[in-house]
Image (tube, rainbow, N blue to C red; front, side, top):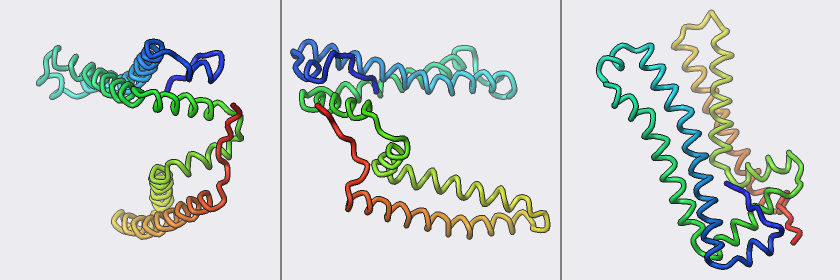
Length: 191
């Protein structure tokens, strides 16, 4: 999200409703543009590549269809994200929480503490990233074993992948419980 450009936190929290509306509009616009750009980086080159290298795509879609396939996803992402951000920051309390969270993100904290906070805040994403990496690594390592058939490599990958995913799941649960029990690596706000 976009950071608050104010002299101090208290200035950002003491805004009039009209000024807060301007800030929320600016934040939602910038966040929507960022989301649209991220999607556009994928959709435009994909349509260009399909047009150049895939004859059925080129033959079955006209110029307007290809243009729409390149432009509509970023426009949708922009509209969806900017509306969600604007509605999420509509009340004074939610705007104040946003300002305080921006202050917390800007605080000086070690990289391993930030990683621990991210893993604590997003346990499902941590599990997914770790699991995909583990299964991909097992499959790559099994691919080097030429004496195995492809189906045997897939079965070995499945078995070892399941074991590693269960280990990562247990590790994520233990880590989350550790963070809750001891309240480590939490952000400190100096207001």
